[in-house]
Image (cartoon, rainbow over the protein chains, first blue to last red):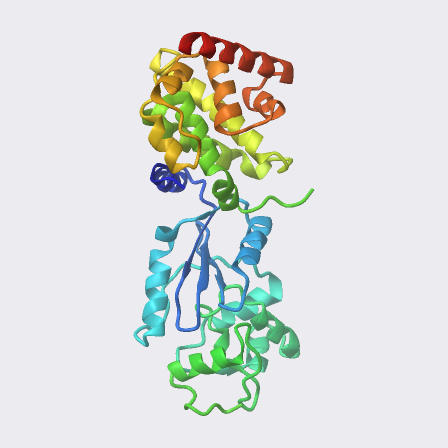
Length: 193
Length: 155
C-alpha cells in the first residue's frame, strides 16, 4: 500500500470517529502472555481477546453481534492499553475504564458484574459468585459465565476459584491464571492446584 | 445471507484499487478527500448492505459518484492528472508516461472513468458498468470512444 493511501486511511479513521461511525474500534497490544485483542464501542471496552484466542474470529463475531462497522483504530484504545501495561507491571490494582456489558446477558452478566467487584489480590469461590448473582445453586452456570467472560483481565474472572482453593478453569489457560494470581500476590511461585 | 465481514477487511482489500481509480479520476490533490468521502459513505451504508458479493463494484460506484461531486464542486469537468507516475510505481501498476495520463485526464468524465477502470484496475466491462451506473453496452461504448480519442490525441 502506498504512503498516500496509508495517510488517507489515517484521516478516514479520524473522520469516522468524529462522525459517530466508528461502532467498534480495535487494536492489538503486547502483554507478558502474548498479543491481546482490545475492542471498544462508544459505551466502553467490549472485548478483550486472550493470546490463545483467534483475533479474526473474535472480530467476525463482533461484526455479527454488535455492528459490522469495525475498524482498527489504535488511538481509540490508548487508555485501555496504558492501564493494562501498568497492571502487568504490578503498578495498577484497579482499572478505571468504562465497560460495555452487552455481549453477556441475564444471569451471566450478573455474575460478571459481581466478579468485577472482587478486589485486587483477593479471590472468591464460584459458589459465592452464584449467590451474588441471585442463585446460589447455579454454581455450574456461574463457572460457565466466568468461562465466557468477554472482558477478561479487566473483569477479573481469574480471581474466582473453586471452593477449597483449587484453580478451576481459565479461558487463557491455567498457567496464565496462575501467573496472574502470582502477580497479584495471591499465589506463591508453586501453585496450589 | 451470510453476515457482513468487519469493515476493516473491506478497507484492507479495496483501499488500493479505490485510491488508484480516484487518482485517475480527480488527480492527486483531490484523491485523498474523495477517498475519505467514499469510505465514509460506504461505512455509513455498510450495515444495511444486502449483499456482500460485489463489494468492489459497490465501492467503485460510490467512488465514481464522489469524483463527479468533486468535479461539480470545482466547477469544471476534466482536470489534468498530477504526477501519476509516482502513484503507479507505489501501487504496482504499469507506469504510463505523463503525456498519456494527461490525455486520459482530459477525456470527458465517463470515458475517463471507463478507461481508468479498465486499464488502471483491470475491471471487466460488467463491473465498469456497475461502477458507472450504466449498462454494459454503454460502458463498452464509453471505453471505445475514450480509446479512440486517446489514439487521435497521441498519434
